[in-house]
Amino acid sequence: MIFKNILHTTGTRLLNAVINLAILLLITNFVGSEGFGKISLILLDVTVIQLFMGLMAGGSLIYFSSRSHVMPLLLVSYLWILMVTLIFAGIGWIFLMAFPSVFHLIVPKGFALAILFLALLNGFMQVHYNLLIGQKRISQYNLIFVVQITLFLTLFLLGLFIFKQTGTEAYVMALFLSWGAGSLSGLYQILKTLKSFSPAGWRKITKEMLHYGLPTQSAVMLHIGNKRLSFYFLRIFSGLSPLGLYSAGVQLTEGLRLIGQSISLVQYSTISDSRDKEYARTLSIRLMKFSLLLTFFALLVLLIIPENIYQLVFSQDFGIIKTIVLVLTPGVLSLASNTIFSHYFSGVGLPAVNLRANMVGFVLTVLFAFLLIPRYGIIGAAATASLNYLASVIYQYIVFQKQTKTRFSEWLLHKDDVRLFLETVRQRNKTN
Image (cartoon, rainbow, N blue to C red; front, side):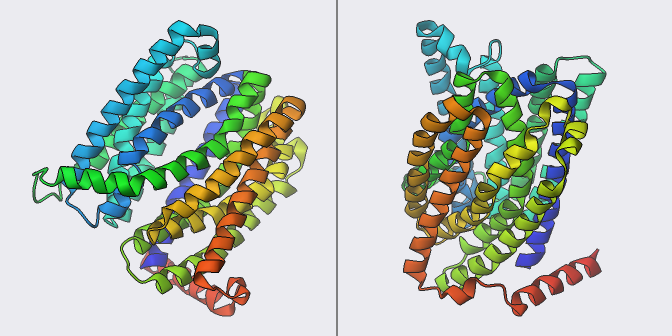
């Protein structure tokens, strides 16, 4: 059942990767690097707000959904999302009044309110998604996710070619409508199975979520900081156009990261619902092998494509994408491992390990961002990302080895691992 869910989720994420590739092609050919830079900045600002929302409305919901009633979880999450949105609105207004030029380096002109409402919508959507995952309703989550991303692509196409909107406007409007649809669909799935609408126990669950969520979300914040801090450095030191070029390379490799994310999604929902640490250890090792192997072969495909093909497909300006992918390769493989390790430690109730790992990576991000990005620009940003991802996963590996006493031979790919994977694929094909 676990591997069946992984295949379902991986299939969904692969479809997402294909759609993201289609969106990337549209942007590189019809929007350009500067427009893509603006879009990347908007998404980054939304992500920053979401990081704070995630303290009470993020991954901790997956953990508590099998340990608490849904209504108090919804109440606490909704109120927290609203409060964070209002706080950021106030901080943003003060910052705009005091430092308008600096504010617009971080927030594109004319999009401040849109960023707030997008963060609000996505916050609600992620609450519903996380509850479905925590309840192991993976098929419903996958269906809603597919509808949402397909709707986004459709709306983006309509905005560009039918309504003749600018690339940024078409993108933002597609986000509004698709995230709204995803949020409402998720809420419907949650509410239709509720047996009680009583919010009783919300005070207790608030304390428990804070206790669990603080180290977990702090780790997530540092992890996203490791992944995205370079974007702000590029914007400040190089401008919107280089940011757009770098974003294109990052987005292409992030399609590969979906492999590890899909596997770890099912891993986390399984481990968090179990009390057997040995099972969690062996499951994580086996899933790590699949994650690294699949990610490696996917990377190989990107690296053997000639640079002139990238220029042909993504337009002449985006020919540097292959170089970006090459420099990001160690980081992409590290992230495939990092995702499995992170969900293992969170699932067994040790999120502080992830926090410390990401602190190591964050220190290196800040250090190398100052050293490499002003001098080497896009390539410096890619090198910074790879170095911090590698440092984080090395720390996690050391802790995992120390705590679990895992033998090195267990990390090697064995016939049993391959046999189990092939049998799962065959069983999946028979059920279709």
